[in-house]
Image (cartoon, rainbow, N blue to C red; front, side):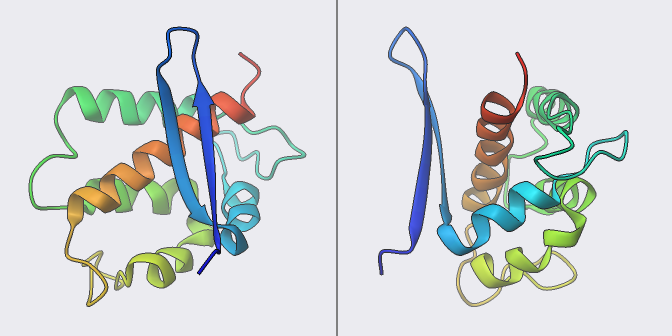
Length: 127
């Protein structure tokens, strides 16, 4: 179906980052982001630098590699706790963080959460 929204951030050199999400979950995800200071929702202008820095540090330590997605799922639950049920709908992820019948592609889950972080940082931060 045609139920997805693609957010693409274009940079001067022609590089871009893109995140694709079913449109019915977009607002719920953005509204449920909560930074370390407790600011939540788009109106309160939470600091997306917190999750962006965490992802950058974890990427440099190769935490998202291999046949696992526990790190990315844990990060999502920390910053988007109230929206964790979305993962069950999108990826059929159980409470233990294991992908179910829809996908066993841990790297796809990792990339989806990483791209959410990068696009959210560039769209929702005052940089």
